[in-house]
Amino acid sequence: MTKTLAKKKKKRTGIRRKKQIALWNAPPSTSDHIAGKLSLCIGLPIMLRHNDATELCITKGQEGVVVGWNASIGKHSRLTLETLFVQLVSEISESSYNVSQHAVTS
Image (cartoon, rainbow, N blue to C red; front, top):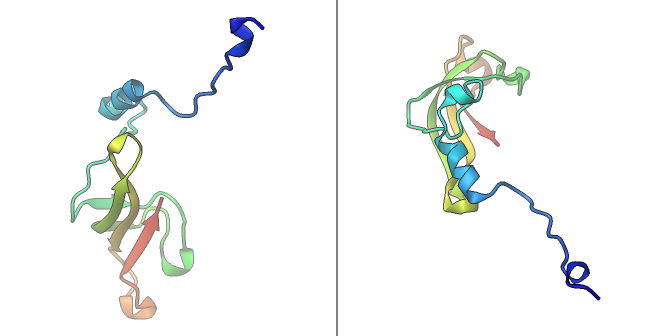
């Protein structure tokens, strides 16, 4: 058996570390203004981009602010967002729904 047959080709799943770091550090202008990483802070204004739960007024265009998040160490030993907690700026009285904080999971 030849050496070339004995070696099995490994399939790579994922992005090489060097390329991943370059993507994280690339300015948003290089990717249609989609940031490679998102820096969060409490009070950061947000706008929902999808109609996730219209019965709770969680709709596209709804505004809110970040009130917290859960993160864990992911690939490449970096923090990875698991859950983002936002408080919606509601135009409907909160007594109608009695809901002021919602969790958005990734």
